[in-house]
Length: 123
Image 1 (tube, rainbow, N blue to C red):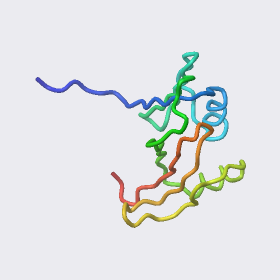
Image 2: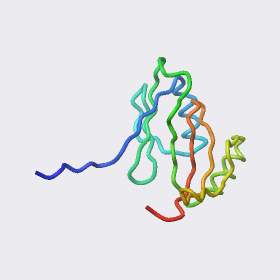
Image 3: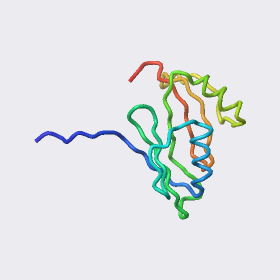
Image 4: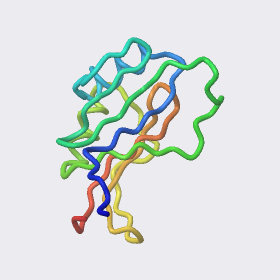
């Protein structure tokens, strides 16, 4: 018996403030809202990926162990665009020889770490 096909991934993360999260991902990052479910909003990332944020009062105080990585060929373009919007970066664009990637880091309004990354050798 063959394994059934999977269509696409969705990663869901919790937020205490869905409106602030929506404003950030829609108006600052520029993601397209794919579905508004009231207490959850799902955004399209590229052609086949999605990320969802759900309102949840009982989230952990600090979001440990989660990195939301957005892959692009234009890390510097994203860095300059978001910097112009007043966002502060934890790390400006730099090369990671260990992983052969070029990347930068910032936090979203929930405290989640966002990595904007380019693979120097495509997957």
